[in-house]
Image 1 (cartoon, rainbow, N blue to C red):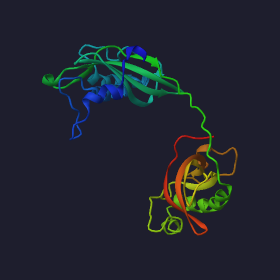
Image 2 (image 1 turned 45 degrees about the horizontal axis):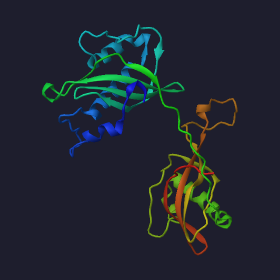
Image 3 (image 1 turned 90 degrees about the vertical axis):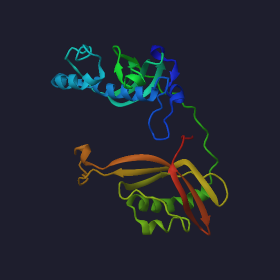
Image 4 (image 1 turned 180 degrees about the vertical axis):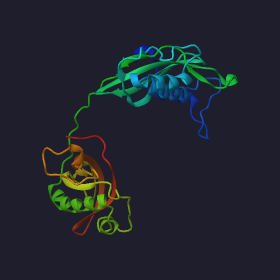
Length: 276
C-alpha cells in the first residue's frame, strides 16, 4: 500500500474494537479508530480552501496542529481545492503514540488519498491527538476488474406472467399506496414502501430463473424511477435539466411466490452483483 501503509484499516483496528458502551477501547495500544476519525475530520478542513476563505480555514485548522505550526499548514493562500466523500481508508500504526492514517476522498472526477501523520498523547495526557507532520497526496487504488458472470437459465412463461404484476406492484410501492400493495404481498405479509419519494417510470427488465412456485429474482429486476424535482416537468428540450424529472435505473431482487395463477411478493431487497 502507498506511503508504507502496512495494514488495512479493519485489521489495524481489530485490537481496538469499540467497547460495549460504544466508546473506543484505548488501553495500552494505539486507538486506531479514534485516530482515523481525527484524521478524516482534519482532512475535511485541510482539503477545502479558497483564497476568500483563508482566514476561516486557518482558524479551523488550529485545533488539529501543534503549537507554532504554519496557520495554513503549507498552503500559500492562492488557488482553490474542494474535496467530498472523505473517509478513513488505511492506517499504519508505528507505535503506541504514532501512526499514519490514509484518508480517501473525491475531488472533481478523481479519487485520491491523503496520508496524515498523527500523534497520540496517551491516556495519562488526556487522550489527545495532533497532526504531527505535513500530509501527502497520493493516488487512490483503481477500481477492481469485475469478471462477468453468466446469467441464470430463465423461465420465459413466468417472466410474461410476472411483468405486468410487477409493474403494478412497483407503481404502488413508489407511491406508498398501502391498500393497493396488499394485493401484491403474500397473505399476512407487509413491507415498508417508498412513500412517494419516487415515481415509477417503467420496468425495464425481468429475468425469472427456472424453479418452483417460489422464486428468488437475483439482480434482474431493473426499475426506472422518475426522480422528483419540485417543479413542473417541461417538454422543452432546452429547459433547465434540474427542472425536469430525471430517470434513475436501479436493480432489485425479489422473492416471489405463485398461488393459483398469480404471483405474490414475499420480500424485496437491493440487488447484488450484476450478471450477464
